[in-house]
Image (cartoon, rainbow, N blue to C red; front, side, top):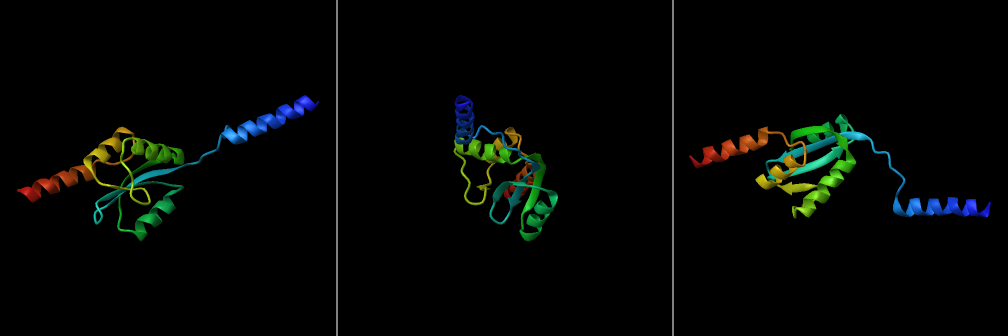
Amino acid sequence: MVLKKLNKEYRKFISSSLNLVPQKSKFGILYTLYSDRFNSIEVGFAENDKILKNKLLRSDLILLDKKKGKKQDLNLLIKTLNELEISFSSKLNYRYSNILIRHLSTLGWPVGRSLYKQRTIKKELSFV
């Protein structure tokens, strides 16, 4: 009897200290926003479309692309970009670069193709 109780308490202790209890994570929207004014990319997670629309209405950001995903995907992306020595400045804003877009695309993050092409065209027109 005492052994069963100790076993039960031991399992509780191990699972709570190591976070072995699986956490339920809901699906939401993974998105990428672009700010032309600051030349920055913002990646993020929204629980639903309404939250994302409100964010777009309150700021001068452009939605590049979005897809269904979990908040864990965002955390994994941040850790991966840190490992690649690409750090964010504030509130998950990254300075725009072709390398960043390439990494995001390789990692399966929604970046859209329109911005990359538009920026290339604008740069070519400004040099001509």
